[in-house]
Image 1 (cartoon, one colour):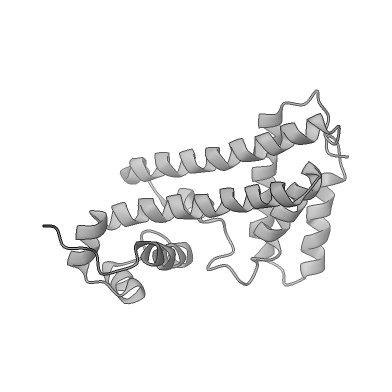
Image 2: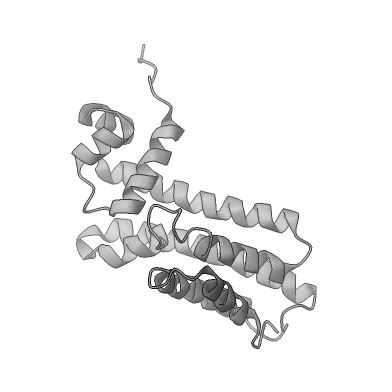
Length: 195
């Protein structure tokens, strides 16, 4: 009979997500993981297969948090534009000092990995595409509401928003002025095709 796990898997993944987000994949050692999640290396390997295996689960966890937040905002708002604004604010302004790292964990992962980690790069790209697809569905909702130009390609607009979020998160590391960040978020929607 297999021994039951003596740890809360989701709690471990949440703690590891924050650690990887803060330090990055390569800078996170097994010792860092051991200290953060209070598990011995053998237990980590038994539960997740490897450091890579745990990292894959943290990428999935981080992505799911973003998707869940987007769905919650869709459920709470009657406007697609308002939904997108609140989401971008949460990703840029509200996480400026609260998040483990001001950058998106997925963007940070892509920027640090090399072709030696191609599988992790592919997984990260897949997760970014999932978020892009959710943004695309919100844009299509906005097009049905006549809030967003119906002649524009929703996927292209979703990619544009992802680029804006990545850029603003980088800019947020350069300033402490939250009102300026709020203004920059509004500026995204003050121009065609969102205005």
